[in-house]
Image (tube, rainbow, N blue to C red; front, side, top):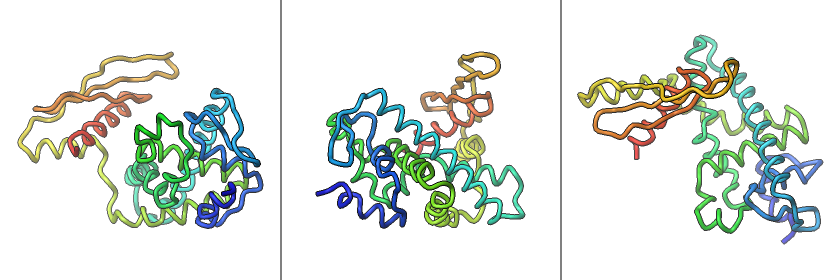
Length: 239
């Protein structure tokens, strides 16, 4: 099977043909893979370069997704304030949303992984799928600019956007309501550490809910770290 045949379904689903097919190959080759794929089949690549290219595409795709989703929300909900739009935005660009789109596009079957990642269930790993989805969007943008990337995002994220009639609650509020609904004391937040230079700090915050082990979250501000910790706690409670 040629590379084009292998990726034909994805190309049709995207309705976009790459001018630089190697960008699509890069986006679908996880850094764990020891081989890349060139126009004539597998080619050896340095692991450092592979990781750099993949992560650069992730970085680009993340920013493009954030911009397009923000624009979609701005026009779709003209009466909502910044806070409501921000909560919607956070829900739509989070790992779970990206992983859903990745599965719809079939990236779980197309992603090239190392044998170790394959055996560890990497194809079903939400983080790995969301990273691949970001890398794919970054590759489309790098190859064709904003228009095709935005068209793909609008096509898949409009459905996700329509699922919530009201803005989702932020994680701290949701965790507080969960605790109160079960007669428990309010969650306790504790700053465990601050790293990095003053102009770019990283906060580590732990949250504790009565009857459960504490979990931590990181962020560039105390507030962001608390939200991350609350999100992690909610994920643990849902399990």
